[in-house]
Image (cartoon, rainbow, N blue to C red; front, side, top):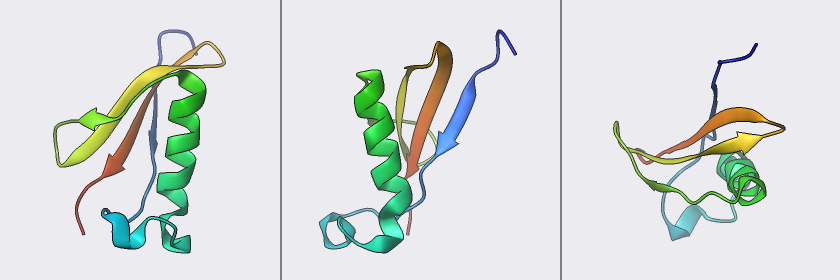
Length: 68
């Protein structure tokens, strides 16, 4: 699988009102993975926050949709 990039999309609801809600488990997992990669989310295309890095030597793109 060399040369492949993983795309991991953490689903959730944007905004502080939903921050600790169980429906935001996908956002929480994406945040933990970004922390492990030493990456930070930034505004990306397609109304999503995006972080890029490597996990276990594998190139990874993390995304958190910013739409309701």
